[in-house]
Image (cartoon, rainbow, N blue to C red):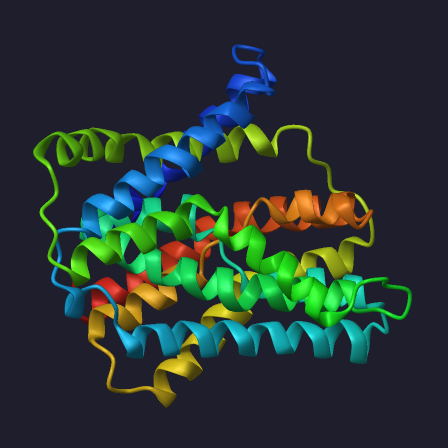
Length: 315
């Protein structure tokens, strides 16, 4: 148990420090945007490149892991639709946001940080790159298609998909994956200067990302229909891992490590930028509350997965 606390406690202490630094006005909350850009546009892409570029291509992509994570996430999304549309009788936008909150983990910031502490940042980056592919090419399109393809939408399905594709081409993590995989496929040598620069930047990614998460939580409030909000926020930490377990049972050929990695990512909280998406649809208060609840609760869900992992096979 102490080993698990030694892994998870520092993660959430850094998040708490980010929150407290804004609350006590040591750092202005507006600075969090620049720090977040540093992580998403520079540090994480550098880390992905450093992990993948020099690796043999057959070790970069694991089809069984991709399939497990895709199936588990899509099943969690479907449960969100059934709950929101079938039980609560809410509209398509609410269903899209709730379903995504259940099925889209904060993999790039919290998930990666915890996994790095277990298997090291290089291996963690290869798993992160595969999760980013699932999230970018499956989960986000499902969110926007469901939210925007309503009766009053002026966009056709083709226009919507074209807009999503354009956004993907500007995603720094997708660009980093494409570039690094190209180096891997063609066995291109990575210049020492580039490799060393990328290596130096990798140490920035996890702690700054966690600090930014804490900064972003300041000012968010628990507003709206709290029973439903709590159901989604805590449901993310239960439904997504359970659906991942089901996917693991369906794809037994995956490696033991990849199965536990999928579970760990699924036990991470809802991705924080869903609050920005919620703001676009006029539901920022509701979605922000979901982020708060799932982030706090993820200390227990991720600790539970790590405990299970440690008792079953060890780290």
